[in-house]
Image (cartoon, rainbow, N blue to C red; front, side, top):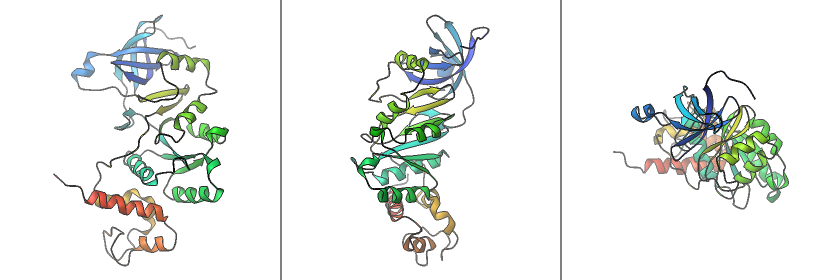
Length: 300
């Protein structure tokens, strides 16, 4: 354990609940902290993932105060978190069947935040290699890293661990896809020090109710989030939607009409690429559905 002079140090907020912030500090200790009154006065809310300066009140009891937040690289609204390097979205290949419309909504949401995404398909034992290759082709062409695993058989776990190394990763996905099982598998080799962290914050091993950072190693964290079943696109206009489908990019400017939405217009380069199999049909279908949804919203 590292030694520090004085009672001030830096750390990362890994959980906030009931007015307390749990800060994993540079000395390897998890401190239970309250935020200074200045945060309320300035209407600043510390977020999970924030790097913070803390002052230790009682070293033996590991309590302290959050004195200052360091500058954020980014901040997510859902889940509420800061300084996220990448997102790992987990879907099952079967049982339940993957909702690709929901997946595409998540990709748009992360692209809005300029956060890279890894798409992780679980339960490879329930599908064929051909089905997996088709999904890999679909999502690798939309700018994502794609991986496949079977948590029940402990297959593919090492690849995921390598992708998480040295980063803060938000892990998300619908309920029932094996996200919690993956979370537990990733922690199976975690050092005792981190196990103490989990016990101190009273983390349930199978049900995620709060947003929290799980410490894998000193510089490697992942943000376990509650499962989602729907996502509502916000902050995006219908005309902007095509910009979030990066497989359309090579064909932009080659359509007959400037500002082509690639839906009903004639002589559309994107629709031509679709007909030639260079754009995945499922992605295009979801694009059309989302465009209809955005077009049907009232503007106030």
